[in-house]
Length: 197
Ligand SMILES: C[S@@+](CC[C@H](N)C(=O)[O-])C[C@H]1O[C@@H](n2cnc3c(N)ncnc32)[C@H](O)[C@@H]1O
Image (cartoon, rainbow, N blue to C red):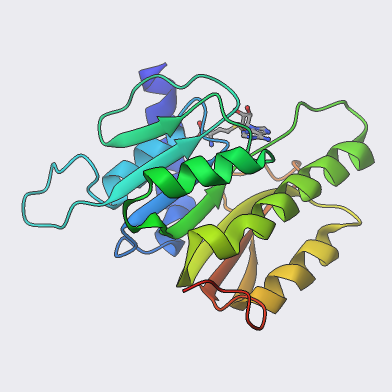
């Protein structure tokens, strides 16, 4: 398992994770199992304190499934991001109650019906976005995976309402034939009056 995780990490580090700055100290990784993204996040923010010359960040992974312990990461599992009690638990665990970055690689169990799977994944991303005012620091970053489809524009519109910049990313590490695309939204400002200071 460790070798597999390292492979995925290396690939994402090369292809996409550099887009989320290492100055962002608190990261919440939703859909974290088995833990590859969390491994990269731990390295990026020095959450295990391996670099004594850099500040130590914090990585929180959340998943429905069990995740094996990882030095430098804290895991909430099993935990369902769509359950309001999970956002409360996230708030309690995050230092200062806020994340600088929310990452989501969440994926529902695929049914094989492309439109249905797409709708369910967009709905997961929208649910996560709806708890963002409670969790994300103003100026923060939100990165989520989607499968391209008819509801993608809806998610993009919602992100555009709440973030200064929204980009669609297809990392080279993502298979060309896969419909997976990532939304990278930066400079969180929330909807008018929605960001809780
Ligand atoms: C593609 S995997 C994530 C892989 C992970 N990013 C990594 O690097 O190892 C998708 C994960 O999303 C999780 N997931 C799906 N729905 C979820 C939900 N409602 N709440 C929390 N996690 C969820 C699944 O349990 C699954 O582990």
